[in-house]
Each structure stands twice: as structure tokens, then as C-alpha cells.
Image (cartoon, rainbow, N blue to C red; front, side, top):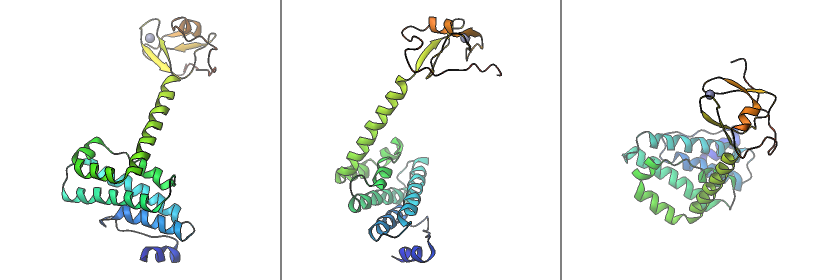
Length: 208
Ligand SMILES: [Zn+2]
């Protein structure tokens, strides 16, 4: 509440980074700001929260042992997530921030019991995380599908790019640096005929 008043008077607030519930306090200021319609507080608190989470995860992952300071950090993060899920609605933007926490496997291994118990008690969070992961995998697959592979006629180097090589221009092998006309590249690549996709010209970097 003290921080809320500080913000109302000064349009900013500061928290001590070594507070044991640093992340959670940012999350609380976000939900309070939203609840009482305090202009600018939700967006400022959200940014600070995102930053605090990132730093907390990074600190945990440097050496993912369950030493006391790290145990404090993980409990702060989990308390922040709990606060978010208890005080916001579905699809609130701050939920997407926590659903995207880049947990590292070493961190999760070091805190396996705490983590597992937490997820069991916070099924909405588990759901958001899985939705986000599935979405991420889908985007990755789309990204991979856009690539076409080309084989260098001379050195056999295989490379891929999102652009389609077309005839009438010269293209250079990224490995042996030999140049060939686009027709040669196309002839070497089965299944990907020029013009079969959006033509996005790849210009030879003749200056390099
Ligand atoms: Zn080559």
C-alpha cells in the first residue's frame, strides 16, 4: 500500500531487489493499479515485473542448486504466479508473461518437488504454459516449412533459405564461394520449382 501511495504522488515506485518477495510485489502493484484504475501503474508494474522475473530466473539458472537464496527466489516467483492467477482474469496480459517464463531444465530439476507441487495446485497456469508451448512449436514448424534447400553443384554444400533462387541472376555458394546462374541452382534442387512459391529474390552478395 505504501508503494501504491508512492506511485500516486510521484508517478514512480521502487522496490528493493533483495526483498524476498520482489517479483510478487511487482505483480501486486500491477493488480492493485488495475483494480483501482490508477493511470500508468499497471503498465509500469507489468514491465518491472517482466524484468524482475527474467532476472530471478537468470540468477536461479547460473548454478541451479537449491541453496537458501535460490530457494527464496523460486518461492518468490511461484508466489508471484499464484498472485497473478488469483487476481486476474483469463487472458490478462500479465498471465501471458508468466506463461512464457523461460524455465530452464536445470532450474526445474533443482526444485523438482516444489515445482511439481506448485503446478498441481495451479492448473490454470499449467494450461496456459501448455497452450503457449503448442503455439510455439506450431510457429517453429511453419518457419521450417518456409525453407528450401539448395545443394552447391561444385562442393555439395547444402544450405537453406526462405528465398527462391531464380534464373538470370548469379548466386554464390556460401561455402566454396563459387558463383552459378540461378538456373543451375534450381536444376539441382528437386521439387522446388521457381515460381511455385512467392518469388522473393535472393541477391548475390558480389561485394563480399
Ligand atoms: Zn560450394
